[in-house]
Amino acid sequence: MQEILPNASQVHQKYMSLALLEAEKALRNREVPIGAVVIHQGAVVGRGHNMVETLNDPTAHAEMIAITAACETLQTKYLHNCTLYVTLEPCPMCAGALVWSKIPTVVFGAIDEKSGGCGSLFNICENNNLNHQIEIIQGVLELDCSEMIKQWFKSKRL
Amino acid sequence: MQEILPNASQVHQKYMSLALLEAEKALRNREVPIGAVVIHQGAVVGRGHNMVETLNDPTAHAEMIAITAACETLQTKYLHNCTLYVTLEPCPMCAGALVWSKIPTVVFGAIDEKSGGCGSLFNICENNNLNHQIEIIQGVLELDCSEMIKQWFKSKRL
Image 1 (tube, rainbow over the protein chains, first blue to last red):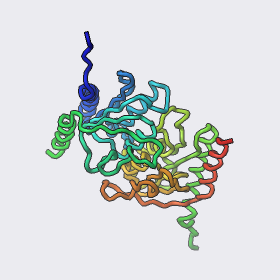
Image 2: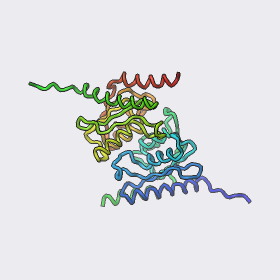
Image 3: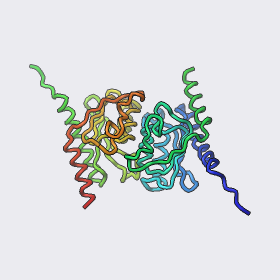
Image 4: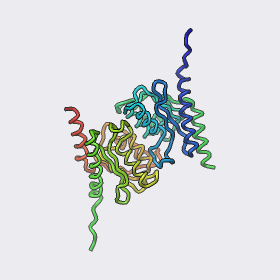
């Protein structure tokens, strides 16, 4: 009997759900709700949620924390054969970090039109002058990801 | 009697010398020799040197470590009234982090024509679409800064 494998879209949704769980952790800590996970051979090897306010550190974005955690888990400075899932398009800082990590693929949910570093304001991940280019897949669970951030900003204005 | 104050150029050279001392620490640890300091009211509040190999972490650039250290010292996520001195033009990751930190001024030594994020490959620090722009001063102790990096790469090829 042939095994029924999940298709790529289902796999992406599964891992983006884990990134959304990370974003919820940020939400509970009154941070902008953004979450990320790094997947290697089907396992989570790094996870992170936005901790800028908690740590008083402007570099403490979900992706940065997830990258550092994954490198610690895998004991390497390169995330070959990994995929990072993040609820919002990475900013220029995080896009730059992802290029340095040599990760082959990044999947994100909502687009950050104002300051996105993966095609919106800059396209750092696919720039041919850098020594690594990243495949970008966008729009996975986009509504869930964007709605969580929108609601957060709306609540701040009340 | 009028006090003779050092001119801006001398001040920049003084603090860039401290960044060069940080770069030497990286050199001793067999890292690409790049160093950074954050100055606030004439005092060093954060310092960092490249630790990518030591920590197995592609995000562990001199500027990132110096920013996080300065935020810790000042107990704030914003580096208002600070200046970061770094021996090499910040990459896109570090340039993005500096914009998030809202630091008003960045001074660097050598230009990174290949992947610089402050005017060479990207100009993240002065982009008007982001919510903060940074004054960039370049070329301070440029020869010392570039020579240290060139010698390091030369030694690696032998």
